[in-house]
Image (cartoon, rainbow, N blue to C red; front, side, top):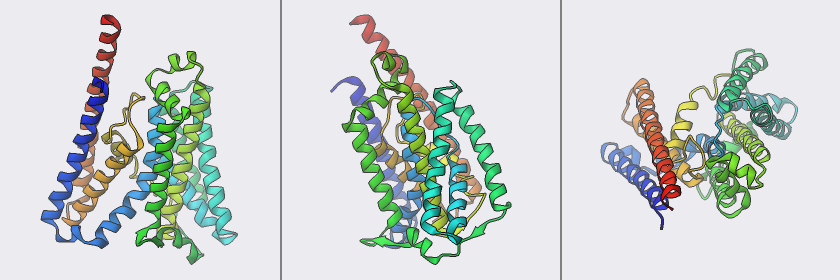
Length: 322
């Protein structure tokens, strides 16, 4: 086992230890935390952010970022609810296609027009918010088909269906990252896109595809969220940016690209989901929760920067003293 691998394993175990300590803390201080109902509620709550986090993980692995997902959640959720008047299935299909199209536009501007991904997705986020406001008239719209709520309310083996969707996507993403050339190419691109390009990897095509996947994941989350409430709202997704990014980075995916994985993201999503749930059970004020989430994000970003510098130094040392 080389130094880099052992360092990654140490980081992974550290995050698992943090998760265990958080579970123990809330189990001691809140009797309601340990109930089956609450545990199932946690699984349902983390599913929506978790699906988005999977898409964001893929984007970050290639060295890019997508911050438009919250707006995509709002737009696609509203479209899905709005189309119930005509056809529920058609509304879901159109929502997914819209999310993928937005991802395609983001990827095209980043890869073909060479625009910074943060700038592109920030601009797209603003545009989409305007479109959602026009589509909904600035007001929440309610669904007319009670069957639509079945997506979020149904269970399998007493576990919420949204979590099963998240878990299946997690397994699929892990398989492609670990067992296919596509996954290995993503890591190579995130490590050094120029070297990856010289190695024959289709950098533009892969980056374009991960943005499309990110848009699809955000649209799917919007459908599940609107199904849970049977409502589409322009306010959906506004509070998702901080916890989703924090969960992905907390899990060990580097903002610099090339390092991380979807199972680490799952642990990060679980940690923040349990924290939010536990804080609510302990009646911690929402603004204090936001403050705490912000502190976590700053800490993990600093840790990520230090880890990136350390990896760069090790790489240089290996080339110099080889």
